[in-house]
Length: 94
Image (cartoon, rainbow, N blue to C red; front, side, top):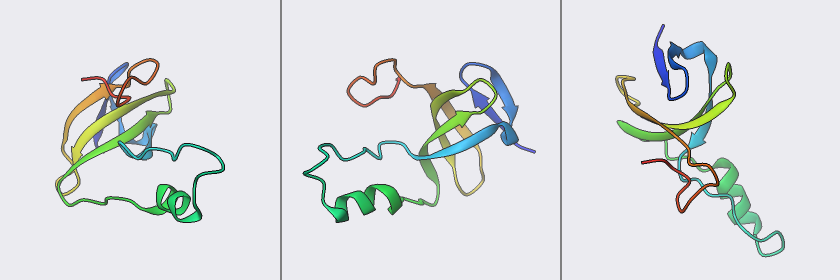
C-alpha cells in the first residue's frame, strides 16, 4: 500500500484517491469554435512521462481536488498542492 498526501486530510491510503489527469490539460474554450481535433486531443492525448509527473487527483473521502507531483518510475510523491479557489491564472497553488 502506498500513502498519498491529501493537502486537506494528510497522508492516506492510495485506495482513497482517484486520478484526474495531467495538470495543465486545459479544456478548449468556445463551444462553436472548437474543432473535432482539439476536442479529441483534450479528451485523449496524455503526457504519460517517465519520471516526474504533474497530475490532478481527487481525495474521494473529503471530495477535494488537488495537484500532486510524483515520479512515475518509483512512485514517490514529491509534493501535493491545494488548487486555488477561483482558478487563478494557472489554477494551481504555489
